[in-house]
Image (cartoon, rainbow, N blue to C red; front, side, top):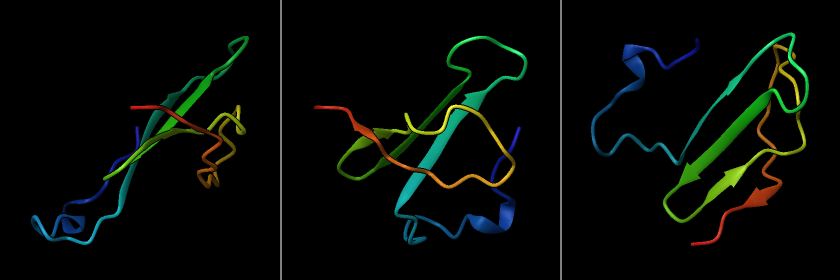
Length: 66
């Protein structure tokens, strides 16, 4: 499990623009990688990447409607 460190929290005006969260599993069949990004105005899902390779960059390929 990965997360932020304590020094990343700078209070309510910390300048964070979005949060990327999700899960992945190894040795499974089908879609084993579910990652989302939420910001002040939208929720996106990365449907391009379907496995975790150790060096990940979010690619928003689907935006959920309100």
